[in-house]
Figure (tube, one colour):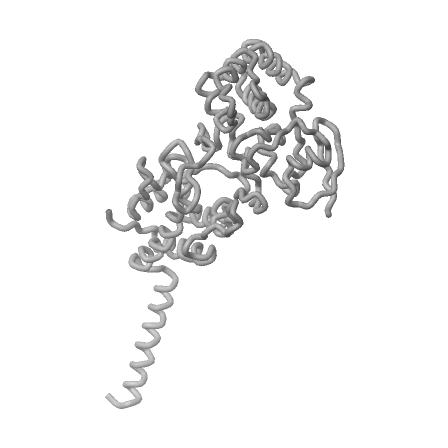
Amino acid sequence: MNSRQRLAIGIALTTVVGIEGRLTAGAPSRAEGLAAWQQVYAVLTHPRCVNCHTATGHPEQGDDRHPHLFNVVRGPRGRGVPAFTCAACHQRANADSAGVPGARGWQLAPLTMKWQDLNDHILPSSAVCHTITDRSKNHNLDGAGLLKHHEEEPLVLWAFQPGRSPDGSPRSTPPLTHDAFVAATRTWVDAGMPCPKP
Amino acid sequence: MPTYTLTVNGRQTEVRADPSTPLLWVLRDDLKMTGTKYGCGIAACGACTVLVGGVASRSCVLPISLLGERPVVTIEAMATDPVGRRVQDAWVSTDVVQCGYCQSGQIMTAVALLRAVPKPTDAQIEQSMGGNICRCGTYVRIRQAIRTAAQLG
């Protein structure tokens, strides 16, 4: 094999590897999907998200995830009870002057979407993954639906711009930016929404 | 400061206020409607409860800039409201009030409850009234008065 032939083979191999790389970039591997899921999981289990994905009859508050003050209860539809609804305090936007968070449609996630157990311990990664990919529990959302939920749902968007606490300090935010969260969700969805083993 | 147009107890009015001003202070200071009380200022006690768009709301944490076009109904309108009248009559006949400071908020929440659930169970009463605090401890009489108002309906 002369040098010209070796060069031709090298170029061909490089082209094949390049195509393979592009294919890989278009369809993430299971390992890439699982890695992306762990990023998604880190956001979902941040207090800004998990405080309203409880397994109990009440929401939680704060980074210490204490039960919501003022005897607030879940109610039949996750919006409180008659005459004492979430909307009694939570408006369509943050009220930073009062320290009350707000976004359109403020409510608890349904109990089928609980990411905690009855002792307020956050469920492991595999359990949360199986829950949110179970269409009997997640309002029948497929991968595209879950991605759209993470991209557009006002309460999801709120978690990344949660406003200020009553003492004036900014609320903590999830470990990723919203853009990075959506990108991780997209990678996980494109990889076929793999879930880690229990 | 911007000007806001409010509908309070069916009457339209304009106020100039800082956007962060709580509705409570617009009612009390600008409109001189002092029936709605300041209790805690952090939505913890319910003394400032009014109806906003029909929803029992804590006026102490509702910035005027977030009110929008939702009508406001306060304790001052309850004497001429059918449910409000019934609740106030039951309050008097049950002799609910001790110091009275929290009672306008209690009554507004009770009215919202009876509009949503005309015949509430004791559990529904307790859950719905659970955010309204009474330091005199008149809870037993409040529950009885709501039962009475429900029976009169």
